[in-house]
Length: 204
Length: 204
Image (cartoon, rainbow over all chains, first blue to last red; front, side):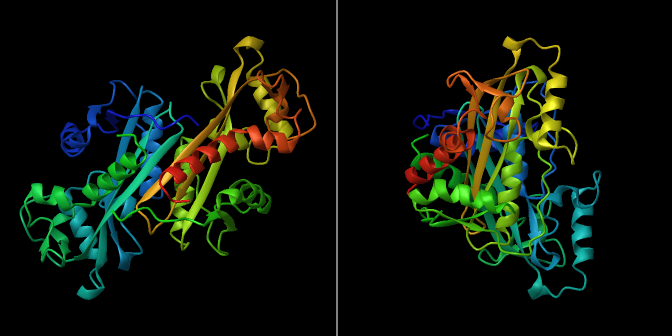
């Protein structure tokens, strides 16, 4: 293998422009510009049974059509009393057309008989970086530990945030401002591990 | 993220004992012992559209049940004139019960109308390393360039090896002894990139 290449930009495997801005905000201080995917690529399937499989599927699929590195992410909530569910199905937990409120209701329904102290859960984010022209890629994972409440609390965030109480903060993820959440989030931890690894490899 | 951990053994995501011996032979000189998976874990599905998705699926799935790092691999042959086929379907190209000879016949049938100089192909191997207790994992890819012949040549190897002519060797992968193939193979290149990365990260 040749030595490690330098990376100064990455294509983000998403159709969501807001996400590009968010990732760029995190990565630009480390010398990585975040770019949208080239237009016209058919959407990648996501069949994985784990977050890690999904992110490598996305990164390696889109990398076939990109000249450079592709960054992909996946995230969800894993509830211990439900054996890790909803996990990779977090966004579809109330069916493909379910709203955020539907997803929360479904989660609370499944936890009905579970007492408060048994409702431990993790918010999980996994990211991956892959290029078709370099033989090595990185996968990184970040988690926050929390407990699932009985009722939503807070006005910020989205998805399961209002039900996710973080003991170390004394608040749900919806009770802290978005910029604070972005600083301490599972995604921030995953990206931070990715950046740390790239630095150690001399790639940024 | 805490600093990078030291790794001295890996579980290999396979039921094939022969493979464990082969990987151990390659990795032991670098201080990595290769162990079989703990007994009784249900087999991981492999739904990926890329080798990279499949290896991260296997490594992250089995890592849920293992105390330590799991190494997974996937490999296949990608023929340019067939748009990269058979790719991740290499081992099932003649159906789930097809023999090696059936697979080769199917490949030759699909290439019937393709002239010799247009039959470029790659033997591809991808490996990945993942642990549930460490936030960073590595994926590494190795390839050999070759051309698909009209008729099998050579007595060694298996699968598509007798059809895969490597111009730089002037031979098919079946015309070189197994120990020489293991030294120059796509898998050796993938493992070598993995080892190189782990060394750079101070993990071995």
